[in-house]
Image 1 (cartoon, rainbow, N blue to C red):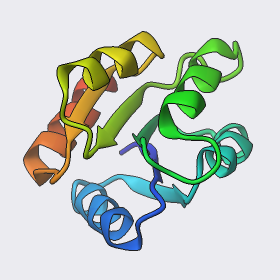
Image 2: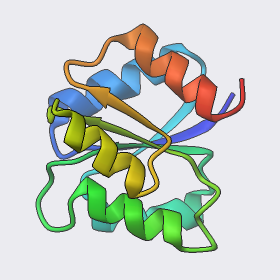
Image 3: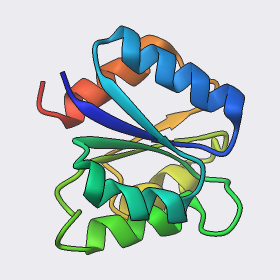
Length: 121
């Protein structure tokens, strides 16, 4: 189906997201930081990015803003996945260019549904 990059510094969360997306038929790539994601997103030609917020170095909000403002990557939809559950966090993520926002703990059906939604399915 789609090529999806999971960006999360937590091995547990990353494995859960990767397994859920793989079960849904997607090819999954991974990065552990915003910087890594930005370096890989162009070369891997992914269709969608699932981005954590709280990571060392460049956080998910910064990486999302950088991706969505770069003409080379602006068309790649970003879904922010975070433990930050305040409405202001969701609004801020969307203002950075994210298309969707999911609060951890992630429900597999919600994740798969939102990925399909941003991919136009």
